[in-house]
Each structure stands twice: as structure tokens, then as C-alpha cells.
Length: 200
Image: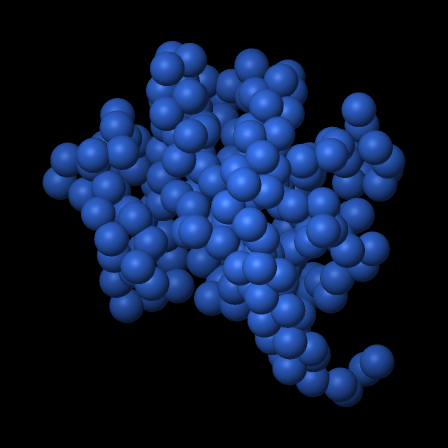
């Protein structure tokens, strides 16, 4: 496949997955989101961490708003990303409630910089990584902007992908700079990508 431009193939898959997600009924999405949350809360990585880094979900994504509320109730510190202007970089800021978020880059809710604390130490943290699809090796198909790719390249903690089982692929395209997640959670099961085996 050397020499073939895979960008159109990636974009076609992105569009297909977005269309599938939009076609889900609200009831089915809510049920899947709840099962994914239950599984996430049960894993040792969540239970042992002190800091949860998570994206703030859009309507077609696996819901993280209830995760944020639950993690705060569990006594965890919670941080969400804020994109840095005129770059493809982002920083994570601690929040204490959803009220500290406002629509910003691409319409995504982001922390109000002046009301939140910048995270500089990622010790004892996990990062919930967004994706349109994952493969069994832990690689992801994102939205193409590269924000998470750049952040994950220097992130030292445990990376957890949450995705619908329907969007799990046998193999996705990956490059030398792509960083796989350590654990994938769907509404049906957990996968440990290193061994590509069902974990539980």
C-alpha cells in the first residue's frame, strides 16, 4: 500500500461512523453510554487514580458529562482540555463543575481559563481518549485535527479509549508517531490492546 494516499479512506470511514452514530436512537445511545461508564468506573485504573483527564463529549460521542459528575463525586480531581489559540496544541485545566465550561473550539465545551487551574503534573492520572474508532492494537481514528496525538506523545499516564462496539475495527491505519491506548472499553467488554484479548 506504499505510496497510496490514505487520507480519503480515513475521511470516508469518519463519515460512515458519524452517520452510524447519528442513526442511533436516543434510548440506545443512552443505554450504551451507561454501560461504558459502569465498566470504566469498575476498572482498577480508574479506582486507583487521583486525577481524571477527559474530553467533553459532543452529542455523537460516548458521553463524558456523567463521568465528570461522577468522578467529582468520587473525590477525583477532573481536568478537561482547552485548545491553545493558533496552534494544534491543548492544555488541561481542573474543573469543579460543568458550570466552568463554555462553547469554544469547534463548538466543544472548554474550561474558562481564568476560573480554572492549569494541570502541570500528571502523576496518578488516567486520560480518557476520544475517537471515532479503535482497533484491537489500541490505535485510534480521530477527527483529523491532531490535538490528542500531540498531547499523548508526551503524556506519561494510562490512556483509556471509550468507544461503541460497532466502531471497533480489526485494524486501522497507524504511523510511527501514533500512540495506542492501554485499555479499550465498549458497552460489551474491555480489551487490553497489548494482547488484543478480552480482559473481562
